[in-house]
Length: 341
Ligand code: NAD
Image (cartoon, rainbow, N blue to C red; front, top):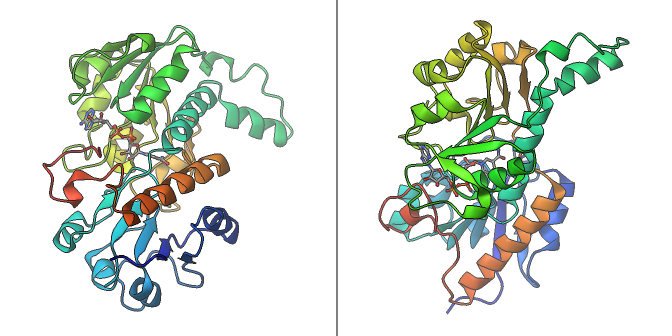
């Protein structure tokens, strides 16, 4: 018999007190929330970092911090891990499986936030928004100097690599800009919903060759690391742009730098990098045609509220003996898949 009240450890050292307060708003009555106040960020082992919180918690609620075998071993009462988003590649699924601890995702709130951010990045890059606004702030008035390098979305072809939850939300929004949408996703079976009015590309190469804008919406896993490598970049249309709101590891950044320097690509907008934050001398930081945001695609107050409501609802389901939603199949030993149910 499970106890009626539980302790949740919010394993997110980057969370500000304001963020923790939004999380706490959704906490079920009587439950306890532990936050890693005062614990230095980026600790990957349990010993010395989070030891007290892990020893007490029934559930871990995590954003993008790793959950290692060490963390799991240090949490004897742990029953389930709830990820507040969907990118779970930093959770040790083998360790979860061997302890019988399911990992559940929270797509609620995530997909819309990332889709809106994707459209924002495309428009900002196409319109050279940051360069124009910074120019004005610096006392210039770049009314004409950016014009030959600025574009509109209408009439362009947007290529979506990955057509799951986020890819579909992006497609929906892109159609409102009169953009043609083509996608490549080997796991999508059957035609996409007719109202999305999208075309299925026969291969990644075909998509890269057709798209003016390539946007990545696939999980990072062993088979997708550096999916966009030197050869893939060469396959892209001259003058195309690359958008990545998924995971930094999908792109070979050295090859991307070369593709931009050679002007084969006109620009890139990235919410994620292979190393976050990047080294201060990373060349992508200094390229005018590159726009980088700090992994905030799903990072709105609205999305956080929606996620927390859904995350705690899922934990409550679990404590009531109902099967939790969006469980990662690999965490419970179900057949291997890149997707959660
Ligand atoms: P999803 O599981 O619903 O969809 C992913 C799709 O990618 C699936 O349909 C799958 O078949 C497809 N796919 C897998 N490997 C592929 C490949 N090699 N080529 C083409 N398609 C492939 O996931 P989602 O909810 O749409 O999220 C996608 C990713 O977005 C997440 O895995 C995460 O990494 C990222 N994400 C980023 C942020 C952020 O803040 N920047 C927030 C949330 C999610």
